Length: 261
Image 1 (cartoon, one colour):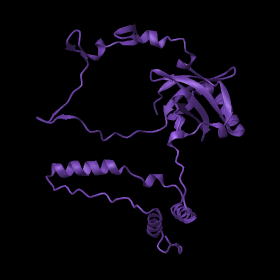
Image 2 (cartoon, one colour; image 1 turned 120 degrees about the vertical axis):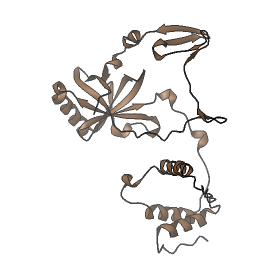
Image 3 (tube, rainbow, N blue to C red; image 1 turned 90 degrees about the vertical axis):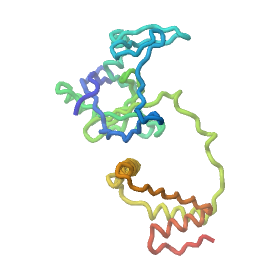
Image 4 (cartoon, rainbow, N blue to C red; image 1 turned 180 degrees about the vertical axis):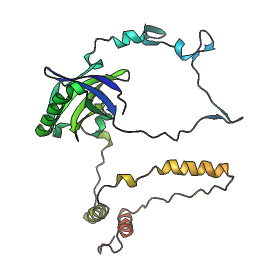
């Protein structure tokens, strides 16, 4: 595995040299491209300078911060690398919280593994074990990919898992989206029975990217000049109780005697 970041993990006065690794291996996307409908030529999006009226090469492009309309402060890569931010070169645990107090799923962005360099293995092992035994997570900040992130550091099967978080002011309130409707006891019982019948051990490896397969099948059919059959999507059941009963019959050969009436 190739590391994506190298620096120090610190808590109190303890400093541990660590490396950051991606926690997943992302597969290539089945991305669609854009064509000019008239001639089927692929659309390109080169960088263009309206002042000089010409296209630019990558090495001609610099970064800047916009301070007003058409007003910019140019910044070099060296200047950005020298920003006085401890999080550029270190992950400093600012405080620990109980694992039960970690934020909900809305807060999480990307996940990474943290592993020690040779010189920091003992301190890392100590830190990892104490975090496991205490049942705590560390809250810190890290600067990666051009911006600073809040992050949570947790013990995870012999390594540390670092998950970047959204900032508190980025989390949207959702009270206006909550529903307040009544359901009958009969509907509730059938829904419980349906969920119970569909509950089992996790089998994540059995799930595949059906969209990708369907898209490639469509592409191959067009290449081979085959007729393309468009299958209509079934309408959703309007009757909730009837839909629950039909679902129960579909997942259980001999469902419990439950009536939709």
